[in-house]
Length: 470
Image (cartoon, rainbow, N blue to C red; front, side, top):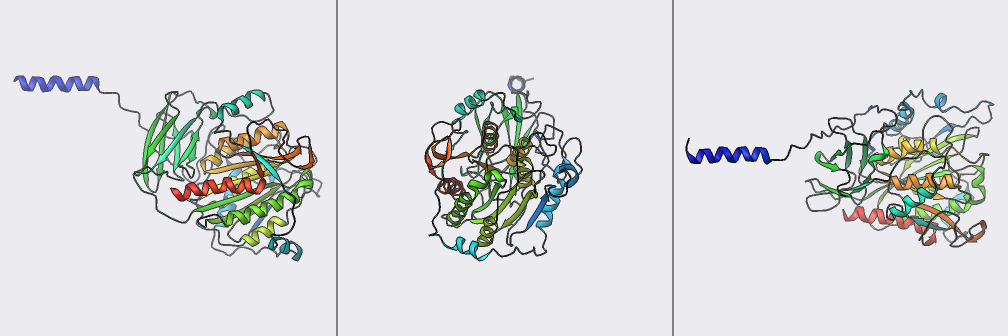
């Protein structure tokens, strides 16, 4: 054997010994239509797939059992959910598919003249509603301190103390909005978590929020528009990862799917009129945002078991005047105990509405009470996970009277989905009747105050501005 050949063989042997071990295979196992996940794992969900909302508001209602002498039963009224809680979404998914059918929807009844006139007259006097806001992801250390201060509250907690920022960009370095993200274990094709990137091409991942999260390495699979990419998350190595997709996103008119989720129980009666006025102002200002976004409007009102209805859902429409008429007809009634049917209402929002593909998806929750945690059926912690999987950001607005449990739940929903916790403020924090001001009873630090409509419009505008740039 010549010296040259010996040298070549030795070089090859050295290379084989020195080469790093091949990375584990992370197949992007994308969820089929009827995937079933184990309990405490990723809830079943459908990807946003609606193409438009060109229709009048359509309404469906889940009765609360009030007036017939029988207690309300989610299992009896909605679906025969199995022990894992996965099939609880089937009725809502079927309803959402029906909404996407080609048949023309039922028309909504016209609003009374007085309400329609109130909507058309922007100069009508209205009481100012002031609010503050905290971004618990931007000040994450303070949020973890808040959680420690409030440990022991009766909530459905998820461990978010460990988090990683994933950024998805195209070949030119621009953010990729609405890319599907799967978080996987080695050798397991079933993802333990799903997510979608926001308008900045970003998503927060929380491995400890899921059962069996002790794996040192997790696989990340990303896809959009038929293109896929992969990465490996080495836990504790670094706080942020970046994944590139080769394609350049196609330019299109920015899309926004916006839902108002409203507690319509009697305890909201003293504020619901002025909140509705603020929400009408929000809708008008959002419709005039730069770039003329293509907006779909949705509304879900909820009460509680034993009331006239549990949830009343108005699926997406692009008809703003018709949507404002629906909003104007929301009235506060029922309730009685402190918690309300927020679990069921959030489930309806996440699974029962016709969310569009490639849209910014936002929910503005306005309520003054936590969910019932003693009911069977949907639970908010599973549906906040499903919301992240569908790319839905939750902006939770705490009205007067929201107790510490409600604040904790609202901040969970907002932080996990990269939304914000918003809270009404008053001249005297202990007296909501004292009028607008800068004070709040909530456990928050370093917040600024605006009118509620200005604050929410700014949050929506910021999201849409990032989408326009991408």
